[in-house]
Length: 476
Image 1 (spheres, helix red, strand yellow):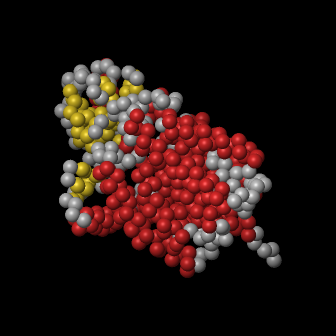
Image 2: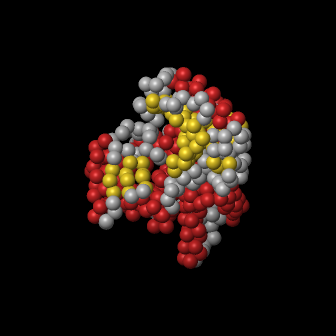
Image 3: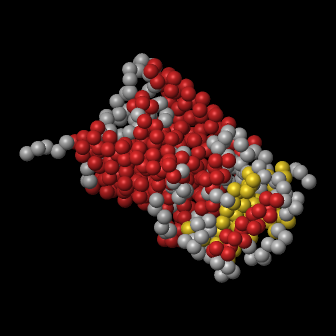
């Protein structure tokens, strides 16, 4: 009787884990039970600490600071991500009692990590009020609190402590960077490409044959940080020479997957087909050749303990750079205010409510200038971090809804009106380009239909653009 091939079994389990993690990253159902438990518990802890806190259905109120309460605040995101990390890290483990215990322990661990994450976010917003954290930093703060608990869920599997730490951190950073892109256009392909590349990543010191790649990779980090091109952080991470190795650099399909993690590529009709073909080829290659044993990619000269420690510390700093850079680069961007021809009222930092001549009374226009991590995000992602979950209206392709109001977005960039997000990304693709202005229109659903609302928005958007360039902060 033929014996099962261990290598084929490992690859099969990896593919199953990949599908499971992909599904967890797309988990979109709300969880009122977690929310109902977490929110009053957080408020009670704040009051014990002497903080005047209260909560409503959609936000926490701490004095003058109002913090939106989203589904992520309930701990759903951390729980699903911890399950994803556990499934992925244990894909070679048998379905034993220990395996199921790890998945069960993820529930209390996620709750504890989420409480710590909420307090960290509250402290961050208090220190940098009225600024808010970037989506990447929002996710990463939660995952950072999971790190001390990961030894309970991620087995070492014979790996040296240094390699175990680096590979675990790499996995957490990769999931943190890809999470904001999941609900965005092209998010399915970005997620699939990321998981396929992470599946083949192993930590190894850089030898002489890869020093050129390491040098270019470090230079690219500085370029991305200075130019605020946040969409390049994910492919930059996946091409890290300490994890990718020469095989990825020499493989056309692997490089296409890395390039495909750029949302603009994943959104493009041709890019989708190329990325889908590359993903199919990588899956076939994975099933045919296996994952490998994670051995070093080439001969590496022996080094002292202090050299290894310094190298790994520098690499940890570089892996954390996307989250630090995304929060600091916005400081150097000018604040763009509505033109003088528009009636405006400041409702938050760099945020204005606008009224135009002839604007229907029940249509609201909100002007968002660039802040935080610079370039604007899609309407669903932007509002998700303000406590609002949106879905397509199904009646008009440009209109979305939260069940109560119709919403539509448009952008003003260098005097030009941009009506969709892919066009906005193309206009702001170049380094140091202006982030422009994000304008969001909304109206109660009972006031008008989705198509009539979209037509009204088109008229108002053109009128706003015709009033002239946005004013810089400090201009009269």
